[in-house]
Length: 42
Image (tube, rainbow, N blue to C red; front, side, top):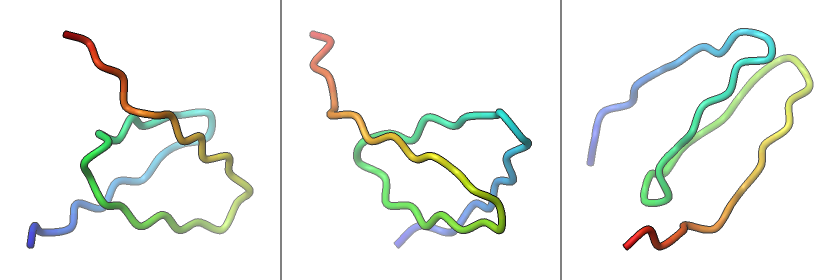
């Protein structure tokens, strides 16, 4: 089990999370979360 790494985003900032990561998202403002399938770049 890995350790948590809190990260605070500012307004209009984005964060790319690798497909094999497990995350918890929380916030007090409206947000949009976009899920994209993993792409094969070989």
